[in-house]
Image (cartoon, rainbow, N blue to C red; front, top):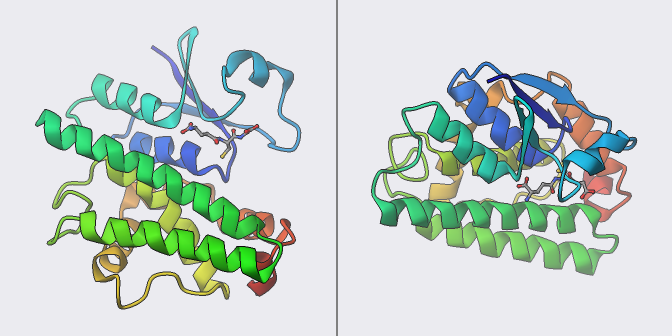
Length: 220
Ligand SMILES: N[C@@H](CCC(=O)N[C@@H](CS)C(=O)NCC(=O)O)C(=O)O
């Protein structure tokens, strides 16, 4: 069945799907839409009005994690653990990755120092939780194998890397050694590198600066 991913170039949830597509070398087209002028059909095709969408022949799937589980199931071997308990735990942590994107949004849109500090603290809290949840030997969330849960976290750390490399306050210090190692390992995964357009850094940093918030003002 013909596959087509529909999304925005800087959407982390679209990237989550594209990481899996790249990792499994799944034949799939990509249509990038302009987020400022989404076509009228998006509201018709997307039940929640959001991207990513995955067109599968004449059907349309929505919600990034649902799409990833569909692609994983239809393109074996699976990147989910075989044990139902471990699998359920990893699905839970995908929701923690979603929370990190929520936190990043608050950080990026905070218009005064107090709100920015509060958003930074919220992100640090989530990263502390991640620190105590990561496999002790790494390099990935559950150990040696790159999994679906890693597809979910990688877009967050790619954005954090870019923000910090361009002047934002560092959120991950020596107190989070596992998170630091995890972040480095994810950045080196070929599928993660291949999951964004070449102009991603410029687009993303421009988007953050365009929010007119405290974070954007810190950026070079
Ligand atoms: N839970 C959704 C979140 C998707 C999402 O928030 N997408 C954003 C772009 S990054 C979007 O389409 N926003 C448009 C809107 O909310 O109007 C998923 O995992 O697919």
